[in-house]
Image 1 (tube, protein in one colour):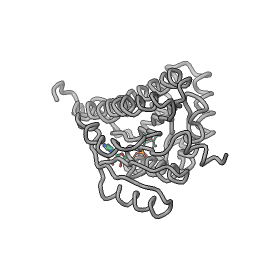
Image 2: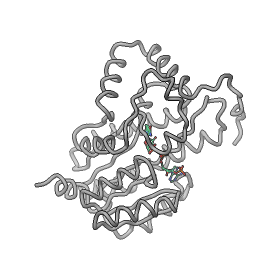
Image 3: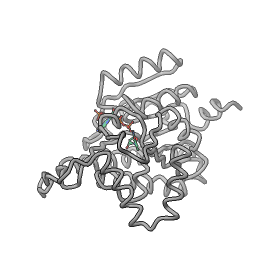
Image 4: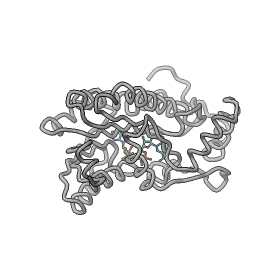
Length: 281
Ligand SMILES: NC(=O)c1ccc[n+]([C@@H]2O[C@H](COP(=O)([O-])OP(=O)(O)OC[C@H]3O[C@@H](n4cnc5c(N)ncnc54)[C@H](OP(=O)(O)O)[C@@H]3O)[C@@H](O)[C@H]2O)c1
């Protein structure tokens, strides 16, 4: 059986991809469509999502539904159900994230809570809803897009990194719980990847000593290959080697300081302004 036929029979007929209007989400849409899957694409950016949906429809004879849903909303699952009630979602890709950069006390509490809603609550809701149907069918796959920042504390993205650790641990745990029931789960950890979101975060890459920026296409191809082969995967050979070595050779406090000093080169602006010191939303 060809790889596309195998992929479609294991994870088809429909894939639901969040955050599909740009970046890794768009690439997940392109590559899963190339395997013959029909798509439900979710995002808050209506115009951009329509562009991606049009491109995918034209290039592959695939059905595409555009779901303009804000995943930070408490009722996001109710808004999504009309798009999926009459179809079988065989592949769920929890990709959307809210990733603001800044020192912990320079970020508002509202921002920190939004990270919990988009990066933690929404993937949990969607995994519960669509994962339960996969378990009943004994067939399907879920990719939780985490991040290499999930592997240790990371200053300048403290809350974001903590939400990504949630995604990773949830995925690895579900991998073990579901693998004997025909459902594959993968925690996917990209390192820095040249997406719209990454570019808009304005890292000062010129000053970085360890920058290894991947393109979205190869990163997503690795994720789709890794699904069904293990609980988690770091994108990029160089990233895998760096993490492997760093995790084994460095005491944890040195690892956290090294990662922190790289983040400071990318994003440091001097003194904290302390604008996120408030305790009320
Ligand atoms: N790029 C990297 O270097 C990198 C590294 C490690 C991990 N990751 C992970 O990879 C995934 C994709 O990242 P990316 O860089 O491709 O992101 P991106 O370019 O920012 O695209 C994410 C998309 O999700 C949408 N989105 C955000 N909040 C949403 C919400 N509440 N409801 C619906 N859609 C929402 C965004 O819309 P708006 O732009 O309007 O918010 C955007 O269209 C994320 O989980 C991220 O944490 C990325």
